[in-house]
Image (cartoon, rainbow, N blue to C red; front, side):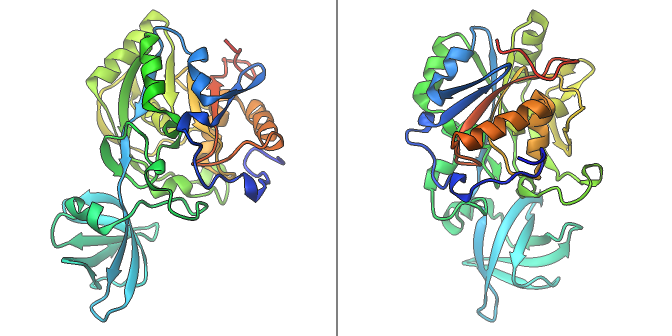
Length: 338
């Protein structure tokens, strides 16, 4: 790896299918030393009293095929509901304001354009109840073929994402039961992952504009996390999306419950306030997610971990293997392995 943001990854290491069973994926423990384990061994690194925070967002069937009144086909990727009946979307085909699109018995009109090039579609009726019938799951561009429900966490509950919170894909109901039996407290947030999560950093880091994502921190989650912080117990974030929600909702020394939108951009040098450990996958080069994990564990340690992952043939990206990171201690290059 030449730099933190730009490294060469052999194409065969980009996972096209998830491990079966889910918890058979590999798990790299990243602290003072690197350990190579299997994800089902995660409980070996958890403690009674830990608070494990999951993102419950569910991927919606946001990839649709529309038809023009003239009969031509248009590929549509819904991004998010901006207001009742109006969605931002990426289109391949008709783009002009006033263009009509037909989705079976639903209709939509292109009514505007956003600065990032996305179009605004106004539907004739609420499209959400029809997505299971009309759409299919939007897979990342580096995954080829249908992976079905494997691109959905087993605990997904709140529809709204167009990309999976992939760190959670490794959990099985049996593994969650084992974690519960240990006395680990499980709580949830919701952050709806947008397509911007795949947007590369193409220029100076300081000039990169983050995409907006909506999130919710329930009161019970805020109470559990704040109680753990007061009592010196650890908070474990499952995924970078969970970190984004937790850090966005941190204010005046406590986690605040509520619903909001975030454009938080976490990068090396930023102070993180909430999670002590992070479960995450191996991320794309030139990505904001890679900067987030470098801020969490320290850039030198992440660079070393990625070099090791490539040499040991770990599987990368959404359906690949996982890491357990310890948060970098203030003033140190890495956190101790505990």
